[in-house]
Image (cartoon, rainbow, N blue to C red):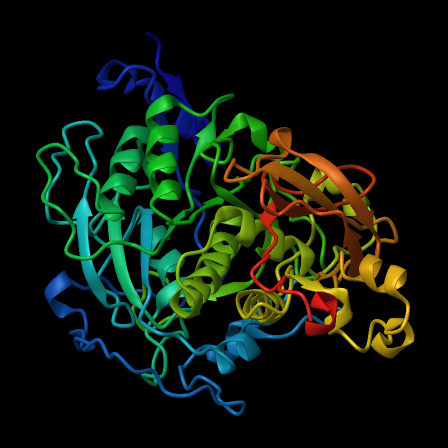
Length: 515
């Protein structure tokens, strides 16, 4: 069948190049994907070095006990002050992602493994590779161990360092007095799936399987497996090919979030893959001022936005800094934050991730994104996300508790002598939701009922309660036969496609209800 040709950033030169490769397709309905061809806006002069001449990396021994969180912690990395996504949003710059306080309060149980599937990895002194593999089969390429390719279109310059830049945002070595502060202090698993920014989508799907520990024919297993995977790549095709969807489903079923860049073609993301695959967490680019970035794809597939403008990261100069843009560099900001969350809380479902990203998001600037069908719920606030997720995991949010156990909500003594009122209150539960950050007045939470142990996709449930408040009183619940979930909605839409399960483990009645 005819090969579908696509790229993350279309150009005449790419289309011509890709069309010459059509006859080399090695899998039915395979597609050519890419990463943006552009380099960062500013970077230091580069003088060509051989791989052997690059600074040697120091192997960082894994440690089992993390230092306690510190409110005064600030990374000491050289270019940390250029990494404005670590800052809290301001009235002028709404898209800063508030990373620092989330890291200061982090209490991880282990080092996360961050997987990056991309092009243009090299031995940058601020990146420590736990393992890697070259999956490229484009043209005459052969898969193998040499994933640290000096991808070059001439003898003096890299044609692509995209993967190195993406990786440094998420997982550059922190506190080593050089380079960048990676959001996640973890191990880095790299898979090269493109050459000079172009490759077969099937190579990326194989790369994903390899990163999550699934077998890939004739390829050795990875020495570590990813906890989160970033895919800042893709191209224009109106459906998710089966082989890509199968790999993503394997990842999701294994508890590994797959974070995808939404793309930069100014088009509906439903026409862009892997963003149009089920199960991915799609990240759009936002300008510093809090608008959807001018080239960003749009639509209801957007799960969250992050800074995609002046994102400081690694370039082809091992000692330099560049300012990257577009959704390729928004995605690893979210990837790093999710890696930190996994390191503290363990496995997270896609529904949990999408719900808390949406409910804690910073609103877009007024204007083009007033319609959430275009831009999604807002811009990631890492600290609000992580704090709300911690409350949820501690049983303080999205948890049913007997109303009579909360003296702030009702005066227990008022009903102590009235049997009828006491009986009614003993069937009433309080549900506390996160306080959303949206500036919209039409945000509501909907509680849905599902058959016990069934999946909580919206189509399988029925709405039983709605509230615009972060606190709800509910009664007549049948928790022996049913599960209950919640979603966040506004007038235009409900976010995500699966409800987050309400915790009912704290529903034991107070002693006076058993009298």
